[in-house]
Image (tube, rainbow, N blue to C red; front, side, top):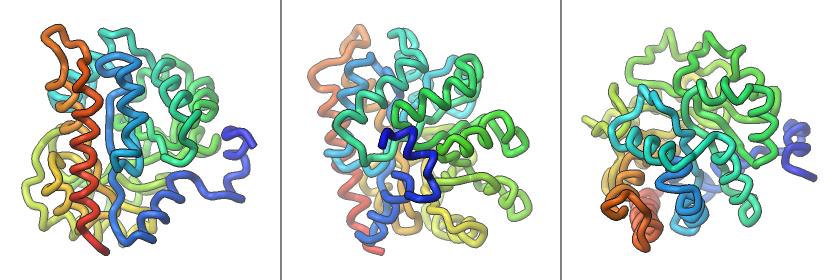
Length: 287
């Protein structure tokens, strides 16, 4: 059954995201979620990186949709998006990365992360159709609050895509149920009140924050923002269902480029090495 047809029978089967979290729970550990900007530093290198992520230890993959005004992102991810755009990356090309990835990998969940503007310009109906055809499993669109669910969230859910919402330290118990309405796949807990790449001030609060969210939902809760190395990943994994790493990975990409900003023979290997280290840190924690 083609992937897009399978989604129409979602009540008869579990999504890749659900299956992956069941798999990691059976292994009594947290999931490693990796973020890479689509098209950074170029389309082919970006594909090679994404293709190697599962082998290196990534359980779920987030692919950034480059945008010119990424308001929630820190310098590292902003720079990655600009590199991708300068290289000619488009939303259609980002979808092509997923479609190409799916030729050899039908199991690893793929989530597209970014902002609504590129999707709006593409056309919501056309985007959802093409995303399903490519093999996308979920969306994280950071600038669409629950009050705007009719714009994309509800159409995405109706089409069979998970819509993953962000919760933050300022999301109180009054607001949280609204945030969780129509959320599916998992909840992404932003562990700091700041932009991507900000350091986690106190890891001891992560478990308490996750527990507070879990009092309102049965969905897995993954924690991101500020995870930079295996030691940090290990600390976060103790209190979360998943650990997200983004800025550290795109910074490794940047550091591997030549003086003209082009990929080198070290680029893919550098990302693989960091992901393998992060995976080791996450897997040191037994739940």
